[in-house]
Length: 447
Image (cartoon, rainbow, N blue to C red; front, side):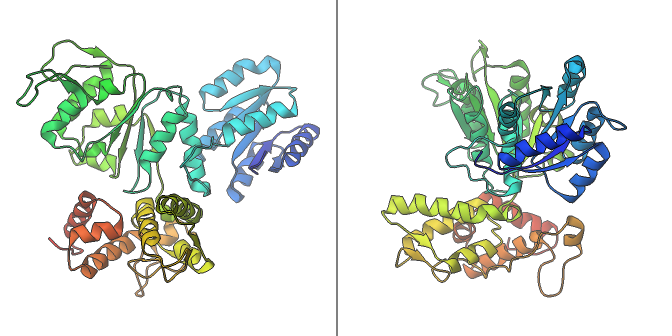
């Protein structure tokens, strides 16, 4: 295999454990072996693993108990169990409990490596950059849920690439040959959103001169992405809930329901639980959408993705401009040290501007048109450490840093929101939302 993974082997038979470790080492993986469940949990406290391979019958903690402990502490980590022929019933129970698969002893080394490749390595896809361990974990979860028809709710800050992950789920699913239809619920006026989603018959409203299929019908046999679902008005949320429950849609002005065969994905840049608590989003619809939650981390939380993403965008926009641009070491250092409050969208916008403005094909630190000084690289800290890390010298956390960056950018452009969103790489709606939050929290911000 081309990719080296960190794998934990839990087996109380010393000879079998050594044989498994030799097989994994020969395949280029870093393998750690322990004799039991307690030792496995201790090893997981010290190190990060891509996959756990465990025997089912062990004492005092058997494989099922270990599986439960792993899923409570490390949800999403693939766990594969090894079992003898007579324990197949227990192995099936383990699958229901969250194990990714089980293998019957004895098995060939190639069969083991194939299972590792299937469950611990997300399939690659054009345009999907995931080099950081955090983003690779999310991509692995996305590839696993893609094999099902479960509804997925993708959350994360604006500009993190939620639609990219949604399209990846579609492309890795059995519906990949069907349509992928996306609709931005925040970009369509409330008065038109219902007809856009559900379609309409001729004469259903003023201007409806002919019948038209809605996004649900257009996505039949494929995947429908409801982008920024938290922006949907409450009245329409009730109608959407019925469509999701009944799997059929009725056009505006129509009387005949259309049966649907679709998978629904949804995204939001807000805290959906908080939106439900505030009464801005229906609780029943939230639970209908939140079958499989997938949180997309901010770019600052996946720092190893910054340079690969920057290189990808440089090649993309350089090719469109007919240039063979490249970064020097100073530019790479500046990109890696910046906080990226506008996430991947801000990074792409910056690279596109750089390609346009750079006088030569060698991009230096001075060529990068960053709006504010870069932030010095910091070590990764825990949430508890981060909460107490504030000093008089600067913002206490990333939320404060983002607020400072947004307000400073607004000040630089004389309060022009249009110019600010271009520099920040976020939508004007997101900017209005954040400024309203700042005023509500008493942190200032223009009206």
